[in-house]
Length: 83
Image 1 (spheres, helix red, strand yellow):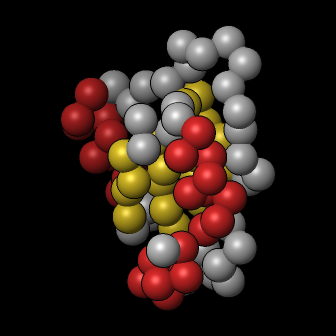
Image 2 (cartoon, rainbow, N blue to C red):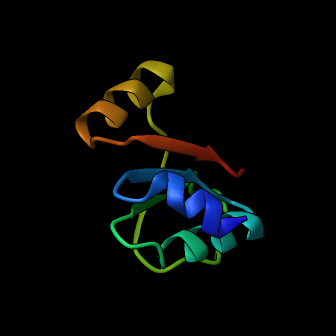
């Protein structure tokens, strides 16, 4: 899965909404794809979440409008909801 998905996201900046073991696995797999930048986002309610390698942000976005502003400001091309 990750290789064909990797081909589709190569050269892009991705946001993974995390909080599950699968989200960490996805982030770890995609971090091996050349040119992919990953931002992993946690809601901040878990005490000791498992974190993938790379950039991790914690906290909400301020609703749909805040998320839209974040995606534009950070040049996010693809969002994965792995919550």
